[in-house]
Length: 435
Image (tube, rainbow, N blue to C red; front, side, top):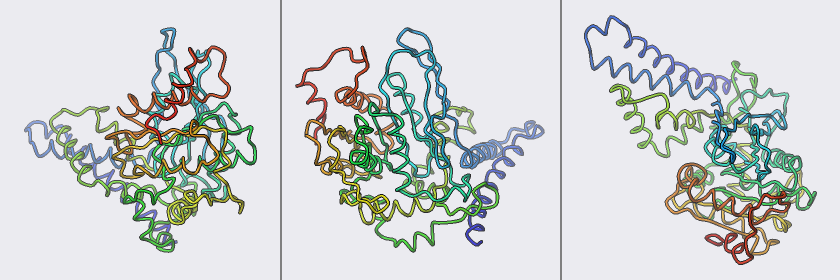
């Protein structure tokens, strides 16, 4: 019960701050005060507006809000989200483009379960939709999952990916972003041994901790500095009475958010002080850069406790993926069994979460692949977020990923590829900034 009380206390603090912000905004907006302009009231109202918005976003799952895009025939293409495969812990979501008839690359985008919703990849989705038939893993907030649904750990996550790959078929191209990269690699290896015909055509791993010890960061240092008992005691709580998952053990999203913010405290403080100043002076607006980023960044979700703890223990502490010793139900998954799936890694030189060297380690584990089936790219000046969203992704990384997909397409739809590249160009494209 004390852990339920802790969970409810965090929610109470969040709710209270949201209420204080709303109250300050309402008081500063009182019509009688407008008779005598007062800069202090302007600042109070600005603080209230920013505070209310900040703490309310922590309790909401953002909408996808995918805008239409212009098709090859010059007409607008509307995008609708459809649940392809429902599940208690997550859905396989399909972005159906209305009016599209021409074949496109089938892509499974594996979103992380690391405290944020899959909507964190909204800009990635928007950038891929014109060229891809896109699916995404849409994980659920653990606080909303009844205890009766059972557990969910790294093995369950991996088997969910196996099921999704089987469902979509061998012409699928998998792109795993950050946390799921090692588990996507394990899922592919599982299929290579158990169901080779269901393997995807390509696997692209972006900024994932395949070998966390290859380039230590604050994240890896934390994982090694605490024991599993300390983590379970300090980080795990039971969902309070307000939600459907009451009693479920979780790693609360609010705790994860506090960890994210503490890593760059000065940057976030300056960002919020600047936003309050802009609101007070009338320079801010609903969809400005600050709101666009923080509306998503602050929206956090709880993770199942067993998933969080098994990730720390098996991926970071014992390095089961890095040592090729990962097991599912006691049976070892041999990454060297992957022989038909081209693998590409993407890293950023300024990534402070999965530093350069952690993700590219996957290529050494793929001993069954030829050099021509391996590729790597290190984006100069890009941080963790930049390698899957923003300018670096749009201008440099995305085109390389699509080229890699095209060069290793197993079942090319008729008329899909405009012109086949020469073998020499294909090898160069595969190597990129080669491993």
